[in-house]
Figure (cartoon, one colour):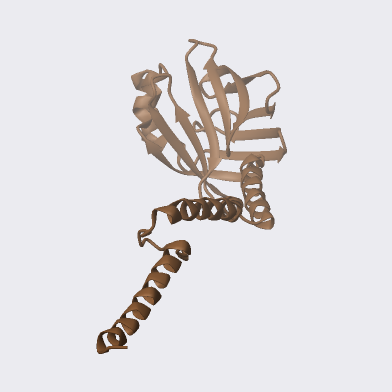
Length: 248
């Protein structure tokens, strides 16, 4: 054989091997691995469907886990069972404390009028007392050092004895059961009709003078200092107070 035939044989062998490799590569499909979270676009059209399908399957499989996590977070917002019970118990205890009945004051003792507060002259004028009586009351300082109140109390049963401002007049006596009817009372200003009730920490007396029909509100209560107060509110809203100290 000539030199030309020797050169052509290797060329034909190389060409046939390359052709075989190209045919094999076209016959075998390209395999690509898709990892979750991989945003790299797929190069081959025939692999897109498989990738989308794998994504859908992954989403369905992940959904129960996400749902469990959401349910767990929702249940945790209500707190543990013992914690919620503890909070409810605290609220119920708070409400129970607010509903406890206010303890009634006990005025038992002997009380001396120590001083007055407010405009006594205006209060007496509102109640219909004339200038002469008001002037006389002012001269003797509205009974400071003269008026003495003695009280005996057993719950809603109270008995009062009062030495008046005017020493020429006898003591007045008053016995009441709070919340039971109307009581007639003869005081320094004449006869009056009275009704009684507890109002918080105070004993409330609604008094109407029988001589002129003028009413007033009378409140008895303690101050933090231990003094007893008679707060008198006139029919026109004027306020005057008698402040008593307990006799030792």
